[in-house]
Image 1 (cartoon, rainbow, N blue to C red):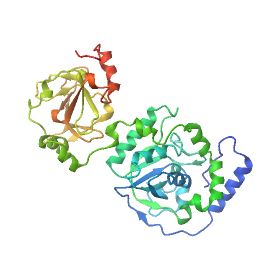
Image 2 (cartoon, one colour; image 1 turned 135 degrees about the horizontal axis):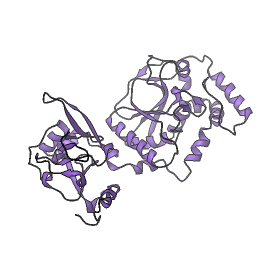
Image 3 (cartoon, rainbow, N blue to C red; image 1 turned 60 degrees about the vertical axis):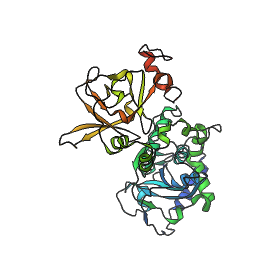
Image 4 (tube, helix red, strand yellow; image 1 turned 120 degrees about the vertical axis):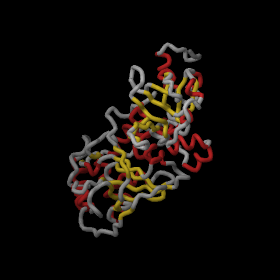
Length: 384
């Protein structure tokens, strides 16, 4: 496809290579550049993926039911209106990507993520198959927090699935201006079938995909690995309807409940505390202590992946705010006056939490956290 391509995988015939590279050279001839207006990322029904040569990615994602159109183009660089030649030389900081326009009533974003993973080698940090360089590297460009939540969850599920021996190299970035590639790149597989098939056969893409994803694996398998809190998140209007006034004010508007007002402050039953909005696992009764402040207090989160902290300057001083990662729920604050082993006090609003008793963890999908209670000598079937 470009001058940056290196030798193909072992087993590809020399004759096929010569034909492939000869045809690739012909493709770089001045066929005329079509109108290339920049397209700003939309907030609905569009997804952006970089998975190497956009001819191949476009052809693969066009096959997903519910996808209306796939447009090849560029994103992420520092040059306005880049040409294909500029991008493939690596001069602009763009990646070759595709914009996928789809009907969310017919296909979910997480299904597009599954198709994206199966279209390339996400462990290759230096390019994609015979196409080498940053411009061919793997990336997901997200248009909003919901897409980021799903993309991060999908990547995490893939990484922990054992599908690949090497770490996932795919990066997740915010979508920037999308520039459609020249007209002759659009629908390339359909308009240039012979050229496309020769290139694709020589690239090694299909052999790799077949070796990793056998015929028994469906495109939706990874979606089934995602915890429920990664798949859907209610919008503000739905939260106003479902939450009482205090819970909404605390979790969505960074408020604080009155001290000693919530029963969780004095509760020490075995179990875990999850985000009242998203259901993310946040804290364990094993780490709960009586801080005598009037708010539920913990020495640490149950899983650091689901809690984020940031500076809070709202009271003319700097405090450390705690929020859930995917629900983006305001939880409370963190202080350095707690007991061992961490010396920290996670001071949390009770209304931001929902308690799941030990006996119900498995039934509610939190069975992974039973081991910590067993290690502490607590019978899983009962309580302390």
